[in-house]
Image 1 (tube, rainbow, N blue to C red):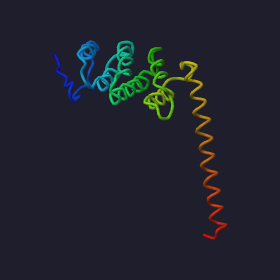
Image 2: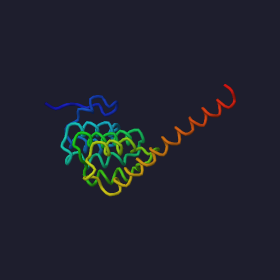
Image 3: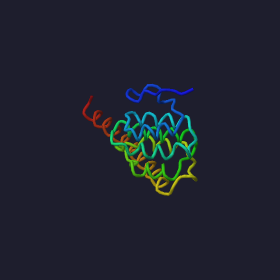
Image 4: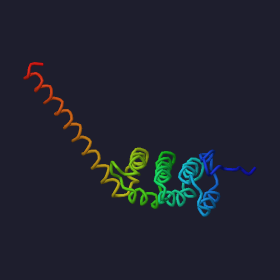
Length: 155
């Protein structure tokens, strides 16, 4: 049975299970390719979905590129691994707080065993852990100083 996908609205694309259909839509310049990439991540083997996910992370539309990185995070969740090309796409997307790839990086750090991560991502994980701990200490000390200040002022 041949399914008809609504590329204009994205209706049904989360069920996309045919990488060749994604390729054809990419060649036609269809919208919602990032949404369809999530469908590929859900429904296709990682090896088949990976090249399409990489291409989707380079889409010009920011929203669709964001969905593509969601698809990369989904692939990490479902497979417990990523391909070298997907790790490179995450690196290119940037792991920082304001990056479009931040959630995909977080999913990868959560669901892929540390021993399987590339060295740059292991270093990022250490950096994030230290940064978050320092931020927590800072906020706690800020609250304590505020409490002391209010007590001294008699409130």
